[in-house]
Structure formats: C-alpha cells, structure tokens
Image (cartoon, helix red, strand yellow):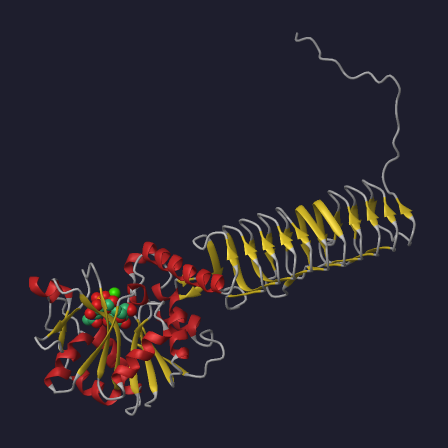
Length: 476
Ligand code: UD1
Ligand code: CA
C-alpha cells in the first residue's frame, strides 16, 4: 500500500455565492465545506493534506490551520496559487511539495459529501500504479468534463464542456473532479500541460490523454450517486446539499431506532462557537418531533421526548425527560443538564450551566442560567433563575427573579430545600433563603430569610372605604 497525499483545490473565487466569505468556508451543517473535505483525508488515513489557496487565502488558511479534523494526524500544508490559471496550474503549485513515493488524491474544497468508501475504491483502482478517475453518470452533464472512451470501452481522455463537440456533449459520463494518481507519474505530465483550449486555462484533465499516450492504463471508478460529487457554487446548491446531508444523518439515527416525526425536518450541526463536532447520542425510544435543531454534542437518554421546534445545543437530557415545543437549551461551553423525568417548556430557555435534577419542572417563559435546581424543584411560569442554587422541591413562583447582577458583579442566590417563593418576587443577590422558608408574593428580598420563616417585604395593603374614582371633565 502506498502512502496517500491529499491535494485539495480551494483557490477558486466562488463568484456565484455572492458572499464576502470565501466559498470553501461557507458552512454545511455548521462546518466549513473545506473541513468536510479534510475529514475525508482523515478517513483515508492520508499522510498529508495540502490545501491550494488563492482567493481569500489568508482567511481560508486561518480558519483551517489547526481547526480541521481534531485528532487526525496528517500533516496539513497550504500552498498559494496566484493568479489562478486553471486546475492543472493549481496542482502544479503543489507538486514541488509532494513526495515522489506516494499516491496523490485530488479533491475539491467545495465538494463536501463524498463517501469514504468511494474514495477508498478510487485509491484501490489506482493501486499506486495508474491514474484513476472518479466518474459519475449524470442525466444532465452540462458544464462538466466528459469521459471519452474508445470502442473497446477504455478511457481515452477528458474533454471539457466548452471544448467538446456536439457528439462529445452527448456523453453522460462525466469527470467528478476527483482523481488518484501516483506522484511519480503526475509530475512529468503536469510539466507538459498547455493552455491551448477554449478557456485559456491549464486543465488538469489533459493529463488523461497523456497517460493514454504514454501507454499507462487509465482506470475509471464510476458511481451513480451524483450527490457524492456535487459541488457548491450557489446558495441554492448549498441548501440542497445541506438537506441531503441532514437526511443522511436523520436516516442514520432512525436506523438506530430514534423516531423522528419527519426526517426532512431535522437538523444536526457543528457548534462553530465552541468548535464542538455535531453528535446526537440517543438512548432507546427517543422521539423527536419536527423542526428541531441540535448543535454540537447533545445526549438524549432513554425515552426522552423532544417537542416540535426545539433548539438544543451542547446539552445532556436524562432518561424520561420531556421537552415541550419551542424550548431553547444552549449549554455553550459550560453545558446544560436536564435530569431524569424532568418536564421542560413549552417556551423554556436553559442557558449555560443550567443543571436540573430529577423531575424538575421548568415551564413557559422561564430562563435558567448557571443555576442548579435539585430534584423536584419547580419554576413553572415567567421566571428568571441566574447564578442560583435551588434546593429540592422548591416552588418558585410566577414572575419571580433573582437579581444576580448589581451592575458590576454577579452574585449568587441560595434557596434551601422546600422553600416556597411566591409570585413576582425579586431576590437581590447575594442572598440566602433558609430551608422550608416562605417568601410572600411581591417581596423584594435583600436580606437573608432564616429557615422556616416567612419573609415579606412589600407595602402594607390599605383599604380606603367608599373610594370615589375620578370622573371625566366635560370638554370646554
Ligand atoms: C472541473 C474539471 C471538469 C469536471 C468538474 C467537476 C478541469 C479542467 N475540469 O471543471 O472536468 O467535470 O471540475 O466539478 O479540471 N481551482 C483552483 N485554481 C484554479 C482553478 C480552479 O484552485 O486555477 C479550484 C476551484 O476552486 C475548484 C476546483 O478547482 O475547487 C474546480 O475548479 P472549477 O473551475 O470549478 O472547474 P470546473 O470548470 O468545474
Ligand atoms: Ca466547478
């Protein structure tokens, strides 16, 4: 087995994206296109990967060095191609950096969904000895390089669409842009390229005719799944590949037994903020309703139910918990945890550091940030818990908040077990409510409340008998 050196062409402009962001940094499932391609290098256990950059080179290199394929061991290099004179010219820039003993696999930075087994089959067809092309049969081959075969069926060359005759344009087998070729053969062929063609470019595809001329056989590994070689040129194509990729992920989960109400309305993405790879780990009998977005690493325990249109990022939801529709859970870097049998939402918001015990209830329009709620605690309506420790079985009333921020610093609120906080209370931190205490509704609590006591801090109610309401003045 020869060693593999991957070349990724990523110098093109991507004009049709109409974006400031270089095309290969556009995201598919939250991950730059180029990083998807680098993952393929990792799957192939390549010895090196060289990215050919040009347009937006500084940005592409900065976003890719180090960030790609955590844990992979290949040597990652960048080579600049300036100006961009064609795919053959691109590969020429990299060749001086390649070792002669390896097999070169050429990939495109904007073709994200090639399966590892397809690339492995291509490398096998090359066998360290000959040029091997990945080809695909397309109903509409417009724009692609056509695979020209002889009467014996052997590949004779590739003709670019713009250079092709009418007869050649009728060929439906096209070059995918992906090839595997021994480095020792590639270098001399590249040296012979000219730009004598319809586009005045150095075509990498011209090496095919050279291989034939030199009496080296050319292998073609033909696939029928166009998605695997589909490139991204426009926002529409990016969205189409996104849906196809999401459908694949949804199908993989369903094969594990996860019940998705609709695999076409499911999204699982990398978390670009924390650099966390997309991973949805599900126990048995998990049900996920339509329109949910999972970001980063999310674990759902046995029997968890996720209602429609929830956004869940970097969180763990333990067995039997139910998350009702329109709930937003975002653990960011700190993570968020929902305990066994908890009931969350609808319209709940759990932020980083929310740690909920067993059977905690968090209802509509309740926000929890950097707070621990022990088993059985409940905050059912319109409330805020920030930087708080909440004991077991606490009942936290509607409209109550922890005032955790004094304008300069954040402070903690500690609420003991079995406390009852009435409605519309403000707990001004730092403050401690002792176990079993009660806080009367409408109180603004600035001092600790001892265990078992009633804390009330509000104007006393008065009733003025026979109160006369103002009456409307007649208009002058
Ligand atoms: C290329 C192939 C064509 C094939 C098609 C598959 C050639 C001459 N043609 O055509 O046979 O069917 O891909 O998608 O190779 N790039 C550079 N530097 C350059 C030019 C391009 O890095 O100077 C990069 C682009 O960023 C892109 C890739 O190479 O990632 C392909 O270039 P593109 O111009 O899209 O080639 P096609 O005309 O599509
Ligand atoms: Ca292209």
